[in-house]
Length: 307
Image (tube, rainbow, N blue to C red; front, side):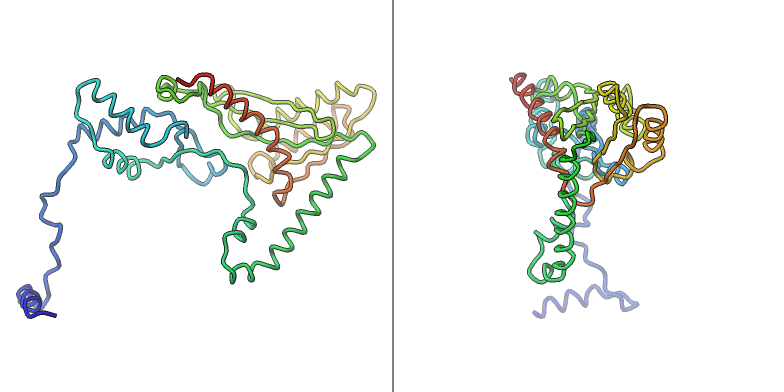
């Protein structure tokens, strides 16, 4: 340590023997953002339509911007809008900082369900994999048993209806990458799909946010309508139905869905309804076949309206 550093430190000692704290960056003359420019960024970000989380909306208030455009695209649109009106423009770094610090917002990326244990094992190092090996092996055995159970249900010869259902991620309409669509107020739509695994037939229930939400009442209404349709298709016998679904507590484990099942068994020509909840990713591929088909159709529609 040089003598000058010691001398500087001693010069900052007060009469009580306390050394004055560092004053770097505390001069008070840092550049500031013009309040009007900052407000223009906030107003622009607020004008972008957003959606809630599909999987964890009960645990987070984070909202999502459609991934049809990147952050650079959005800033470019902001810049063009301000230039058109002859107004001052925030820099891209300022725009990004305001978006990241003053909004609980990120870009929405549609993804399939992932098994927590499988992903944790896949991304672990050698030591962690050894610690997880027993649990992981048991997990793999459970997946085999679950798939065997599903295959046995599909191969039943007694006419039992075996179906899998799921709710697709929120769809925003209209959809497109041009600014005319992207910054317009869009309506959130929901698509609930039920697929008969044996007959390889599917039904889609589609509604928008003005007609209903995505809670157990809406899900139960769709399932009850599906059961009634199956009863109408089999007027000469009592039907048996086996449903497969994910293990989401909100839509699947509630009194409303149980009431719908009880009503169907007591009031309709339904002998029994069995609901099997997944404990692994074993039914994800079955469910996603229909969801992926819907997404591909949506992508085709989107590609036809690109500029």
